[in-house]
Length: 190
Image (cartoon, rainbow, N blue to C red; front, side, top):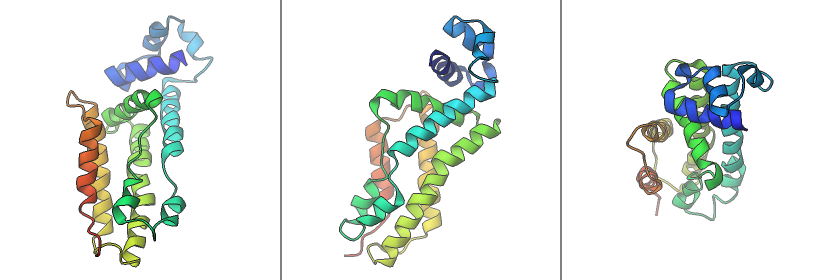
């Protein structure tokens, strides 16, 4: 876990490309060869960070079935608010740093770009799009372009993640305000 934590710290502060396996070894006060007992390469370390994040995300994301189960009895806003989920406080900083690593390197690192696609854009397509489609079918909301709305939400999530990598850190209350604003674009049929 020391190697993992050192990699999170160094990759998030200096960037993946600027950190060597030696830097990680120095951070945890071990010899470089000891790292290779746990990881095959620096890329393998990065993949383990992304795997950790993905597992944690899967643990807090609601399933589409659970969201659709209550679609008849809840308002559109109540249903959509279930998509505003957060990591447990004990791991939130680690996960935030892992996402910032990917945001920093998605232009130059294919693994980071794939990770961003997997954890930011794909969940919105898999959860939000069918949920909105079902609400439209049930006449719970006014018509809107689903693909455009899903892309807008994904871009806001991505922008928030990028902003958290900068000195302009977004607070939870700012995120919740942005999320509420996005959800206000969905108009219930009364």
